[in-house]
Amino acid sequence: MRAPGAAPLGWIGVAPGAPYFVDDTGAPWHPVGQNDAISWVELDPLFRRRDVGAVDRHLADLARHGVTVLRLMLEYAQVRHRYFERPAGTVAPHMIQLWDDLFALCENHGLRILLTPYDTFWMWLHFRHHPYAASHGGPLTHPSRALLDPAMRAAIKARLSFVTARWGGSGALFAWDIWNEIHPAQGGDSADAFDGFIADIGGHLRAEETRLHGRAHPQTVSIFGPELVWRPHLAMEGAIFRHPALDAATVHIYEQGTIDDPRNTVDAAVGMGRIVRESIGEIRDGRPFFDSEHGPIHSFKDKHRRIPEAFDDEYFRHMQWAHLAAGGAGGGMRWPNRTPHVLTAGMRRAQKGLADFLPLIDWRRFDRRSLGPEVALRDAGGATVGEDRVARFACASGDQAVVYLLARDRCDAGGLLRRDGAPFRLTLTVPGLAAGTYRVTGWDTQDGRAVDDAVVPVRGGTFGLPDFSCDLAVAVRRQDA
Image 1 (cartoon, rainbow, N blue to C red):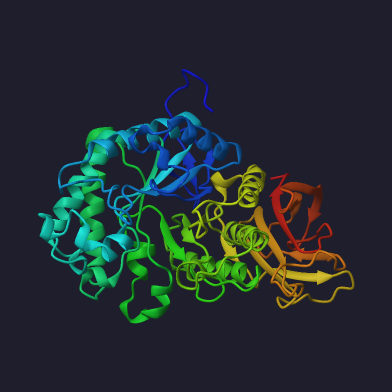
Image 2: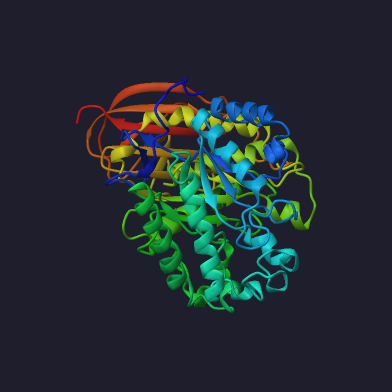
């Protein structure tokens, strides 16, 4: 909790010259958190102020576990009593109170919000009930016109104007996801409207924030990642990764089979790392990239399969480290996909372990390249260790690197990694590291602590690693530059 009388929480912006984030003081800041909802069990007591203290204690616990951000929708349209406006154009007083309280609590605990104005998933499915439906006096005849209809755009702008006027001055607002999971179906089965929609809505919001606050919060637009694979002919990558109105790129990483319906805890991480690398490869201007939704959505929503907690904890931990090491900002943002929608205690410990690792790198000047197969491993006899045995995720500049190594050949019948195998004793080569003296810190991701910390000479990007049996994170930072 922040000290009484402390200065207002500083704003978050993009680091100059590095694809990460900083606060007003120039200190590095990472989005470590998950998706939540105002009608889910941990935040629901704020509605009508039924138990503000319970939410206060919950947010304090998040901060203790290194969480820095929650991704939230302004309304959650699965239920009909959390609409932000009712009727359209009239903001519900109970929702104003809820968000007044939530912003104040987040300020108090140093937490921030990645805010998206609409729950587009449930809005589509339950559109007949939504206040924006023309049948209820709203601006829209059908959600397939959401990106195209002039009256709908006016309503979106009015909502964003209200929100930034009331809460946009707060540093607790990290960034705007100005449209949740932009989709061709919302533009008449075409992506042609994406660029213009982002420019129009994002430009309006930026102008409003600049007028009201003298500056603007970062903006992004999310997409359901598999759509980029399913509909390559629509060429949506330009809008998502390179639109000039956006400050960061985000994707919802729900790879089919490995992530959305996992059978082991390793293939999901391999998929996460590959998608992060591919996404960073689409970016041309060095803007930050991060996953803003992932998780076992198909297992939960369609198959109704209950994932054992031990499996889910390991699956979560492996993916967050793959995300960070492949070059993403933070550890990715899980959609809980559990009953109820809360993260487990093991996932919270994993977040704390990742948060404690972050100070080992100077992110403000870490103009990294995303690597992977380029990182070489050799065993004690000098033989190459292939990716079939150890998956590698890495990002590096000329004088720093983050590496995550994950055993691929040790899954048991339940899809978890066995911990009784012989330890790996490996030498690592990171291409592009300048010769010099480096601090190399090996990190136990399960216990969330350093297991080795040594200052060593590095030539040709090569150095030895501490032994490990399942996985290992490594921070590499030059000391003599």
